Image (tube, rainbow, N blue to C red):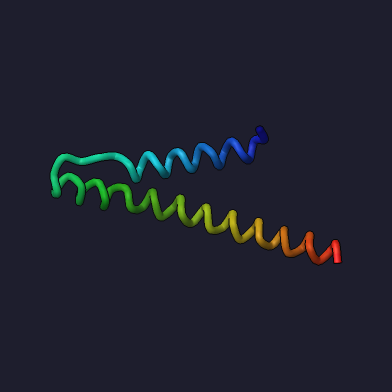
Length: 66
């Protein structure tokens, strides 16, 4: 497994952990949401930037092949 793949697997696991943590009351869930939201937003933004970069590389590769 490549270094980049390993990094993304860790990021996905981190995201899943943030989402799946359970809380025993509504107040605790609300508190967890507001504390985790910035972390989740950061991860989603990183995934989005990586996706855009990959899409650009794909478009470039397809253009070279044509």
